[in-house]
Length: 325
Picture 1 (cartoon, rainbow, N blue to C red):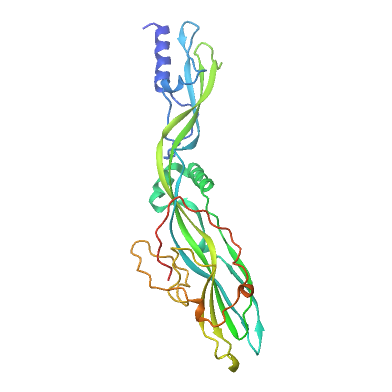
Picture 2: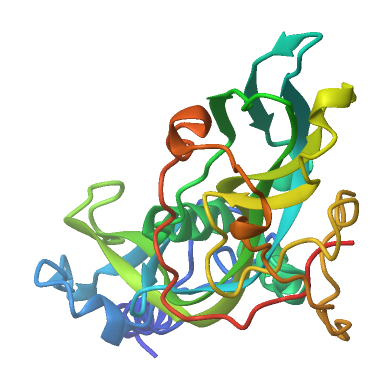
């Protein structure tokens, strides 16, 4: 074989194999193991062209693998899986012949009531394969698409009518959300051409994004989405108040349909989430009839419902979970 023909053969081997020079070492994740691009991939770039130079030697192709990015396939599917009530504040106000005390009902969430979006246990392997950078990009994308509004504190001034003690407890509805997301991974490759007859001269250069396959992942998060007060009336200990009935005054504002209250006023106060696999059937806890109180507190004394953002509805309607116990 003549020397010129041999050089052509070497050049074609470089093109066919597309050896990457200066690329990062494989890390075992999707990005580092993606590529190199084929000659067909490179020809999608209008600037790419191989030419013969000198004695007819064909240009050589050099590549460098760069960063990766994700591209969502549709929007993340976000669903509210379950929610329950947690006790996060309590106190009392009274208006008795012997003394009077008003109070500002205030409740604040704890750290356990919140969890940022993260890969679920079932998708932990996917997170490891994606690597830190791409995993963070997936999480950021889902967080941006999420419309869950958090309520971290509620507060309201309250007073009691004469001869009454009003005990209050502040609860938060805490909800678990899940997001299913499908995305494609792409990697950037820089390319340039040289020729054995022109030394280090770069004749053409550019870059392409190479498809690295589609992936699916599940993420989850936890958030406090609403606040409620539970009120219970008892008579003052003074003799002239003995005719005042002890009565459960209910929820302020009323609980939404599907959100189960604690089984009894003293239960459901621990920081516990409902069991997802085999939840026990909740016991009945009917709302008390305000007519049982001969003279219930007026709306002026209780004031308006506590101001709190209304959480955005989840794309899917979940079934009601058991209350925490």
